[in-house]
Length: 479
View 1 (cartoon, rainbow, N blue to C red):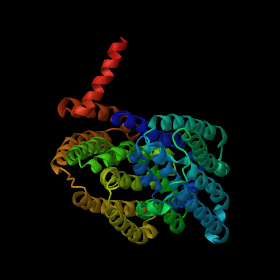
View 2 (view 1 turned 60 degrees about the vertical axis):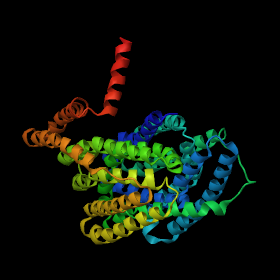
View 3 (view 1 turned 180 degrees about the vertical axis):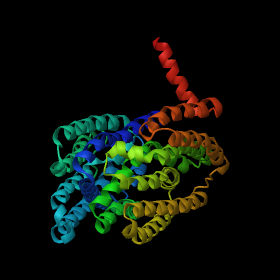
View 4 (view 1 turned 60 degrees about the horizontal axis):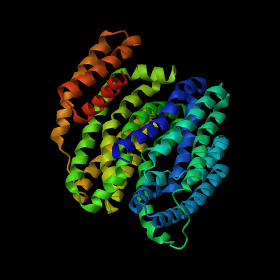
């Protein structure tokens, strides 16, 4: 299947995983309130931490190794069996630690029912094996399954979550999404793999699993750790503000994540074949795509974040506005970071750059969190996240140049920045000269028109022109 089709399916998949919860979020944020939303965010942060420990680097390493197997069923089955056994052992350890912590740690006692539901998420994440389907590039199946499951989830939330007392039910429904997806994946995976215990070599895969896991765990120190630490030192309401501020960001970032996830198997093959010229062109195109999509969104959000938060969560979430403005700047930073780290460094055969980059980010994130979060709550968490991601990006750029021999053409980036100035002018005029209750709705269509004019008629972006031409031709043929 072509990269374009894989990207399309994975884009729909990633958007589905975030967009369906976003559809329910304006409803549940009003029904549950900021403190209950904070409870869910705090508990889910803890549970996700244990999910990370139960997986370590199996996800990233699994995609790479399954992709390298190609159509060799025996080799693919051997890789799958080895990785699954390691995953089973890590899951048992993670569940045991979480249960003990829940039973004996006083600070977690009020959240005991939520955490026991979260155990389901950890256990069934073992059978989710999304890495396996990504490795064999079955993005169409994953997309169709995810759309169906999340549709049921949305309907269930709207039907059964009626007031603030239904917060436990809401968290259970959210967890059941993972459970159902895992059951579907496990059943369908049988057509593409077998058990192969004859070629067990668990020790050979432990080093890369722990190396990639080292990256994930340390990365979590400035992502997942934020909401957990915020909940401990500032309470559920501040955690609710931070959760709300990051909700829309995750949707927007999902667009670019879909592309980088699809590219990992292809980049790995190109690196193995030594095709550095193709890799440089791919890097240039990927950076262009990032800046093309993210800069207009960032400018729009910086001006209209109060209206967006009001639309997304309703009243009582004003404390999320400033964190939202800070976090939205990470679209550029984390977008570049995903290209550098996930698309290139993780696809390379050297584990050293991953370890260095993750260490830099973790220590920066912990230090800034300890300094700012107790003082400034959700705003401090947003700043800590930003500082750590910038540190990761800087370290990653250095490592990419050294280990992959890929450079960033900053001239192309500056060109894109200049083309973004009209968005500042248009949004600024609308923001200051239009009533606040309609300003955002006036800005949306004008930004879309401006985007089309700049990228198709002035800059003449080739990728967008191909897509636009394809859409126009389809409508013409129908007529």
